[in-house]
Image (tube, rainbow, N blue to C red; front, side, top):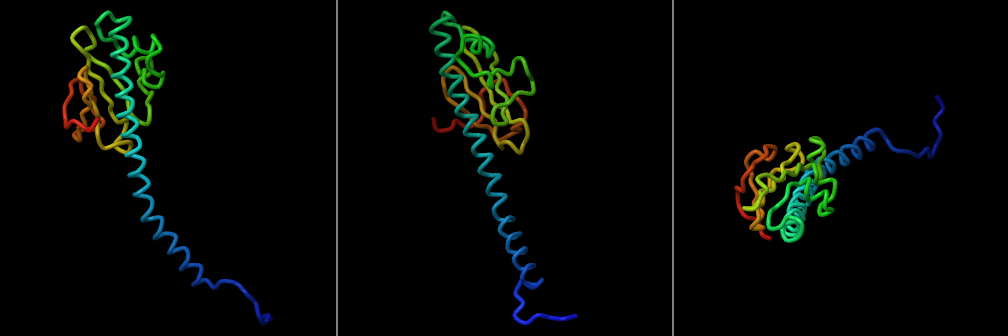
Length: 154
């Protein structure tokens, strides 16, 4: 076999070192990326609960005559986005969270944001007619019908 003088290129060892360095960087970056995604999904869920709170106040003072409405009522009156109205599709989520309004009536309502999977977020959120949003670390994928957990900064 004839070898040319001055032949240039990378050796196998050099290529393996570069691949190992890229692997180490990926191992460090991927968990941080996933944590950032969970935080963004949770922030979106909190923002959506604030939207529901505003929509309920508007509904109660206008077409509701002092009574709070269901998610379908809010959607039908153009107060919430279709992504929040999961009454017609149990598989529809916004940023990986399901949104439910329960016990809507003249006395108040409960709104809940439940993670579709544990990869989406590590907390579930709830709010009521007081406007306080609560975060609960237990069972983020299990829906709740009452406000529980720790109040978060509004």
